Length: 217
Image (cartoon, rainbow, N blue to C red):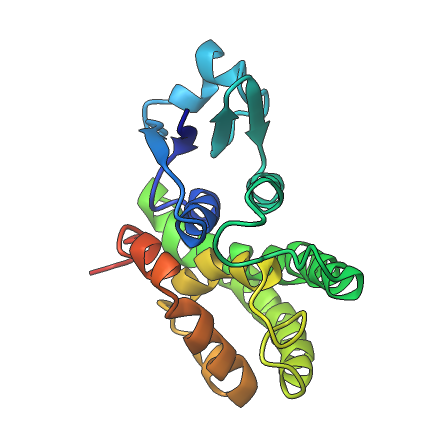
């Protein structure tokens, strides 16, 4: 039975899951969720995710929500298929993947997601971007990227010299961030820039990025 993913291709969180599907060359069905119509707030969807957020994965009788939990599940279930994204045969490397996956979630994502929301999402809903919020989070993001620059000066990827879930989870939001006027935060850090150009050029993500058109003119 094919995996069934409820979400939207232009969504960052859906994009995170779609990327790992393509990395693993999995069969799946994407079920579009009509967010403008409030489908995610209806009882049928809330029965799958009581928080009313996309994406939601259905794998047989198992239903999962939260994109990072889904990617971790897929990486483990299909660990012998495609790229080994969790380094399951090396305890030390697997631990480092977990460390940098948490770094993305706890340090990188809060800052970059706020910037992307204010610059690209808010106008879609008729809201005026809050430049003070953008500026505050640009400062936070710069500090995170300084840490990344130092780390990537000694390893090709965040957890080591191997591509992993820690890198993959960065892809969707960085993709949109690079469409903003502040892409220089990445480009002016040579190791971060090289890392970004590497991971964003992977065939799996390039397939996903084609549908991530928010902010595209």
